[in-house]
Image (cartoon, rainbow, N blue to C red; front, side, top):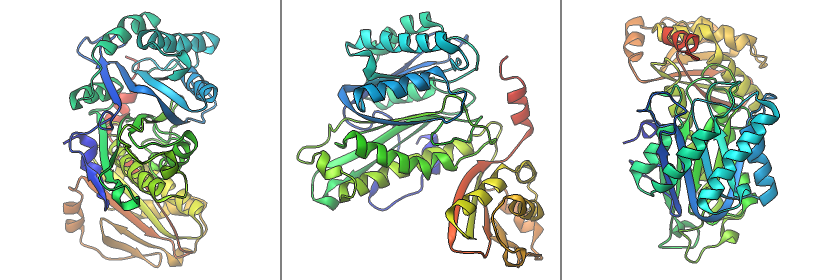
Length: 428
C-alpha cells in the first residue's frame, strides 16, 4: 500500500486502490526516468503523464509574485486551448524560477520537445518544475530524457510509481492515491469512474490556491469549466490546508486531466455543476486530494509526526482557518510536539495572537483527546498518559473558541533538528 494511503480517510461510496496512482484512471499512461537533472544516476528526475487523446484540463497555480516560468507557460497554454491538454512533463532538482525571459523560453522549449515526441501541439503540453530557484533549466536533459520517458510510457502501477518518484525533492517517499466510485448513484449502473493522482511536497509548504506539484487524472467525462470548479473546491479544503513551514513555493502547480475514457453512456452534461454526477466526482476528488495533503504534512522535512489542528466555535470560517493556521505554524507548538510535551500554553498563546475574535474565558483545548484547558484555565491531566499518546503517528490538537459555529482543520507536522539540517544544506 502506498504512503499516501496510510493517511486516506475512508468515505462512503468510494473504493480505495491500494497501489493506485496517476494511471489508475483509464486513458492515461506515465513514466519516470533519470534524465540527468539529478547527479545521482540512481535517482529518477523526469516524469511524463500522457493522455491517450487530448482531454479536458484544469489547474491551479501558486500566487507567489516570484512565480516560475513553468507556471506562466502552463497557465498560458490552458488559456490558449480553452482547457485542453495531452501531456504533463515535470522535472525535479531545477525549479527554473527567477530566470526571466530565458526561463520562459526554456519552459516553452521543454513543452515543444514533448510535443514533438508525442506528435501533438505544444500548447497541449503542460510543464512543471521543482528544485533550486535561480538556476536555468538544462534543455539537453529534456532532449535526452523525454524520448526515453515516452518509450517507457505505461498504464501499470509501476510506471505510475516511477513518475511519482521522479518529482520528489526532499520527499522521503512518493505520494500516490486513487479511488473509484459507482455511477449507479446518479443513474449510470455498471459504470465506474476513477480519480488517480501523484504529488510531491515536503518543504516550502504553505500553498496559496495551489498545491506543491500534483498531477491528478480521472476517466469521468467532465467539461473544462466543471473540472475547474471541482478542482478549486477540492484544493481549498485539502492542499490549501497544509503547512509545513509557512513558506509558499514559487512553482506550486496542481493539474487535473479528464479523459472520459470510462464513460459508456454518461457524458459531460451528467457531470455538470449542480448534478449528482458532479457531486460524486467532487467527493472522490476531495478524498484523493485530502489523502495527499495529509501525506505531505506527515512527510514534512524532518518530521516524525502528522499534526492535525482543528478549531471549532469560531465566529466565521475565515477566523477558524486563521486560528488553526496560526497554531499549525507556531514553531513553539511544533517543537513541543517533537519533544512530546503537552504544553497547551503555547497553543493558547498562538490562538490569542491569531487575530480570531473570541473571549479567553470561552476557550477549551484538547491534545490527543485529553482535556488540558477549559474556560481558558488549566486542567489537571495525566502527563504519563499524554506521553503514551505522543507515540501515535498522528497528533490531534482541538480548540473550541466558544465564539460561534465555524470550524477549520489544518495539517502540519512537528519541527525537528533534521528540518534545519535539510534546509541548511539544501543547495549542496
